[in-house]
Amino acid sequence: MNAAAVHLRGLERRFGDRAVLDSLDLDIRRGEFFALLGASGSGKTTLLRLLAGLDRPDGGTVLVPQVRTVVFQEPRLVPSKRVLANVTVGMPRGSATRRTGLDALTEVGLADHTDAWPATLSGGEAQRVALARALVREPELLLLDEPFAALDALTRLRMQDLVERLCRVHRPAVLLVTHDVDEAIRLADRIGVLREGRLITDERVGLDRPRDPADPAFAALRSRLLADLGVHTLEETSP
Ligand SMILES: Nc1ncnc2c1ncn2[C@@H]1O[C@H](COP(=O)(O)OP(=O)(O)OP(=O)(O)O)[C@@H](O)[C@H]1O
Image 1 (cartoon, protein in one colour):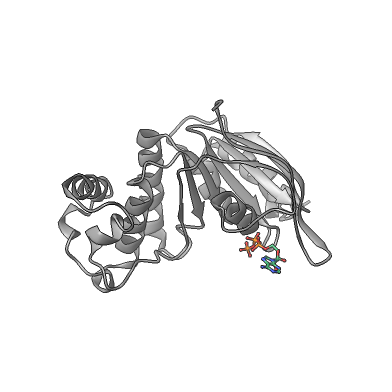
Image 2: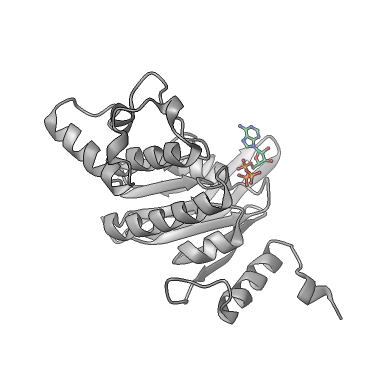
């Protein structure tokens, strides 16, 4: 396999008369964090579902690695399984699986919650279990569908830091679907904007980490991306 973990060419997905994805091209390299922005209904989740293998394209080439995992907006834990069993669900039973599951829970800071039931977890804890479940399989492609959207502001920032750190350790290719421009700039190596079925922007983020929203270069990128999304900021609209 070459360095591209995701290779899409001429991707088409239609619903009725509407081409939601229209001859879309995209490569994401191993270890690269790609954030996908787009207005509501622009096709972001449609693209993620195609990469996850949850949907099939109407045309084009889709090459993705076999080992890929998804974190959704909701944690989607199995209520009748304890935390560790949720992390290792579907994996062969045994001490090796138990150990890797424990390691994953330790990485997300939940080593002391292995025997807890999902119903007893906070929203942020449950989402960290979902992240551990996604990482324990050592995916070559990690698909994140607005995984921070349901969290309160402080938990969201902590979770973003955690995802950034763990992606540096595990080095999967990442596709993050988000509405949040600042989140995309904080986390991504590259940002794309989806509009009318194609990527109208595909830009490398050349800012040092950790990234500071108060940095003028951060603000300039935010303004450009908002304009691509069809949102005009006060600074731009004022005389
Ligand atoms: N199974 C389906 N059948 C018919 N139309 C669909 C189906 N799935 C998605 N669509 C349509 O495709 C378009 C893109 O939907 P999608 O969920 O990918 O958008 P999105 O960019 O993720 O939106 P949001 O940001 O609001 O989640 C929408 O108009 C949606 O109604």
